[in-house]
Image (tube, rainbow, N blue to C red; front, side, top):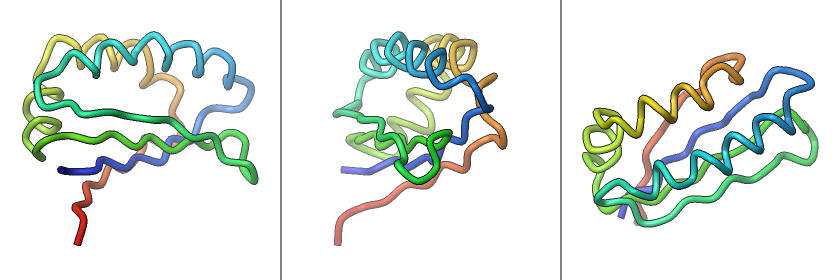
Length: 95
């Protein structure tokens, strides 16, 4: 299993709109073959920061299956305008 980790810094004053859009986007990511689960955590110390943790069967399920899908185009429309700066995404595997 692969863990996708993205630190999401949201433009000030847009938390509520971002959280609503993320809830709407959940069905998009969940519909991709190879998707296992995801969660979004809100930072206590920096309330404009969120952590996206998505689990995938393989790296390619995320980097190819999701990112090259029509669902990703909808994901981008819903979420990408909230980010400042645009997030770095990394992938991890268990030891």
